[in-house]
Image 1 (cartoon, rainbow, N blue to C red):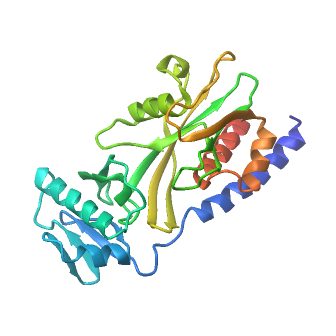
Image 2 (image 1 turned 135 degrees about the vertical axis):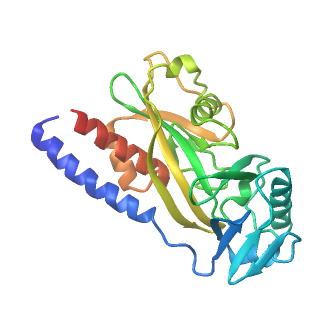
Length: 275
């Protein structure tokens, strides 16, 4: 790439990333209520969640906020109440799907105080963590994956090759290795040269089911020429690799999920800056 081309692309990508980041930093929904769990500030409850939960034993609605287990310390009792909270929300049709997966409940200071069904995280605006793999070919082409039409969010859109949420108690690196196996059929040997996970940003985005608060982390890897990623969990309909300019144009055209677009553009900017 010529110096002039590199400078022009750098400026264009900086502007594009700023536009994407602006979309990822939205205020909480207007009718959301502050959420306290175990006496600590943890998120925002939707109006529907407020209505469904305010009469549950152990839950109190006061001062325009929702309080869950104010007198409970982290442990089995609080987790049992959180399980009841999630089930009550499911019965009230506040949730989108049900995954039978537990995610950490974190305070706004980052302390883990419990675990709750994954589907409850958005209606309660609980902070989740997503790990992504940006995988490249030896020739500098980017591997990407199209989300299956059965996905509840962003069906049919393009995504990073691997991306998924970290389950409760799961170390970040183990979560990435698990997702790489499930989504792309990659073993730890394929990932031997990957970079350490790094945090790109914390997203704040309004969704139909609530509010997404999510730390987005990414690792980079060059896959050997003979490696052909293949989905194993049915959540991906197509995998292919594209050149960098095509990836950028796909981002501009809105073909990627917002998370994937941010991860991809940030990575290209980082690679360009490194020379």
